[in-house]
Length: 200
Image (cartoon, rainbow, N blue to C red):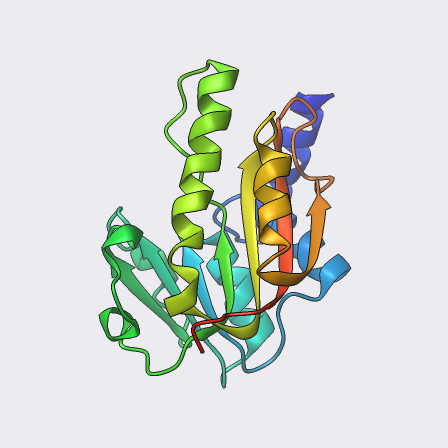
């Protein structure tokens, strides 16, 4: 079953000229939870190879902007996206919006990042939680009040504690496993809406 899913979405992405099958995860999330809208300013953490950038660029339109950060070199095949900017940076090196040539916080922060995996489920899950906890420390600088944050995480014993803490900082929290996620995968997505940003 999982291989059929992989084949279907891989072939679909290739046919529609998207760089990865993960495009359909974001599409499902956005259709269900209305994360993105026209003219939004969006930050994509760990964007490479760029299918989420492709989807977001089209969704926000020419008056929006999507900024992609990744430690890998810029994917030059994305240069056709006129409302996109790219930075080859470690996201945890970002100290202010000036580092991204932005004057105001983002409407939406997206993260399809995953930690380096070991194949040991407990270790990988713990690393996934640590990665997200680290990104949450960046939100007071990066995400505007009432903004949305979407991130991937590996399910495990520590996740619900993380989500419970998130409720202090966001008005609404949703958990979602897109149909395009492989059936054997432990990953799912958290959609956090209405950031309370106490730093403002």
